[in-house]
Amino acid sequence: MTSLSDLNTSLEVTQCADQQHSELNALASSELQDHAVAELARLPSEETVTVAGSASWAAVPQTDHQTAGCAGINVEVLNDDPAVLAWSLACDAETVPPELPAQPIQDAVPVYPVPTEVPYHEILWRDWEDLSVQPCVLEQVSKNTPLFEFRVMSYNILAQDLVEQGLDLYVHCHPDILSWNYRLPNLLQEIQHWDPDVLCLQEVQENHYWEQLEPTFKEMGFACFYKRRTGTKTDGCAVCYKHSRFQLISLSPIEYFRPGLDVLNRDNVGLVLLLQPVLPEGLGLKAVSPLCVANTHVLFNPRRGDIKLAQVALLLAEIDKIARTAEGSYYPVILCGDLNSVPDSPLYKFIRNGELSYHGMPAWKVSGQEDFSQQLHSRKLLAPLWPSSLGVTDKCQYAALCQPKKLGRREYSRDFLLQFRFCDVACERPPQLVLLEGVTDAKPDRPAHWPKPAAMVKDPDPQPFIPRCSGVIQHGLNLTSVYSHFLPQRGRPEVTTMPMGLGATVDYIFYSAEPVESKAGRRLYKDGALKLLGRLSLLSEDVLLMANGLPNPFCSSDHLCLLASFGLEISSLRES
Image (cartoon, rainbow, N blue to C red; front, side, top):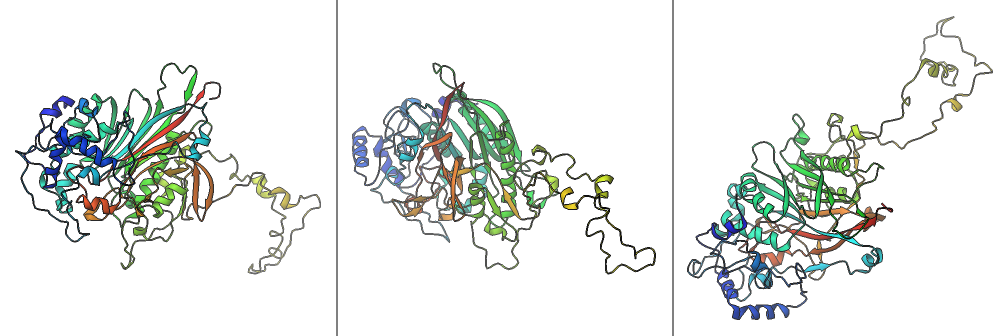
């Protein structure tokens, strides 16, 4: 068992990072703390981040209350000015090597070293974007409508086993900052600083979860659930929530692996929870809707978009089952995860727009990660994508849970079939029929009292029908993304990860919204019962390159965390 106090004393690292870290030692000095705050105030186009106690925050390495290379959690430190302290890592001058040579990424975008006069916290500054003050939100939330506000974080924390299996991906990093003893305290400090109410983690190594993460999260007030990947994989997904804010209604772990199915032969997993928000005392007879939270890590392989699509369809079917109300509508849904697909890829559009025509699509195109258009004989998606034996319909619903068809719709009795004895087709002699006198030369005459066939075969309840092999899949969850995937002030795309020095967005937080219209095949949304109140801004590729990519001495994963603030409408019991 690892406690918060243990992390302050037990974890040690022999060295920190490169020469840029020596600049951060000065921040431990009280004389330079005021200078750092003043410098931040003069940053152009930067806004103060108001989070947890209305304190300004910027990305800064840790203070000298910890040993070098060990970012222990200290609750008292977080109460100080986080613009200077944050969860940062202070390097002791006696243990930090005076100079470590830069190790640029090979065969990729060149990574430029950080200028010594620019500290990490200024480079990696992330603004908190308050969306509750936007006119479109203010119109929907009247002054008389209270909200249950909560924060959700999604974070791929980079399993240590995967680091050690793929060291070629991290040649730009000094080995010391790749150590789990270095990375764990950094990650925990970051999570504790942002203080989410719901935490969705990917690439969580199983032994680290049970021995270190879960005990620490429980001390922080979280209830935790974990699902390891199937097969021989050692990492998985975790969902944690503050038990003071939510109560568990149901939990559904998902395994995407299906023996014998080529389209579902990988070991990825997911978790779907239905949570009941806990309202504070004193609100009287008030109620708030349950919340469905899903977390997953989809297959990476850029060439196997068919598998990615099938995995997402299984996840959506599970969400459909958990989030569906007795009336047939849905509770609000928040879907987090590393989907290994870029914005505006077919997979992304399927989640956001609710429909995808996939038949004949090259498998590599589904995720948009890489362009294999020059590759001969590339795999193509064929309909149906998965067999009916899987029990999932093309509307991403479990077939067993779909409304049964009306009884008798396909039951043809003898009396019913006899109605067609004298229909027009039955009274015509087929031209290929061999003429046999007295047998096939007779033409039946319709009795005068016989009803017209058209009146007998009219269906009083016609239904639109999409055949099973149409190559179209749909879902009805109405999900949109927390992030816009573009930084207008910089004119560059947002990125959530930087494999081999190339920035990309593959991590998402989707949430339930109300569709208003569709333009050029893109569905537009407005907030419904679940309202987006704010988000932690992402960074662009050029900014991360200035910090030597990911991971770096400050960011201890190869992904950035995603953080969003939501509000659920609170209604009176009479209304609910």
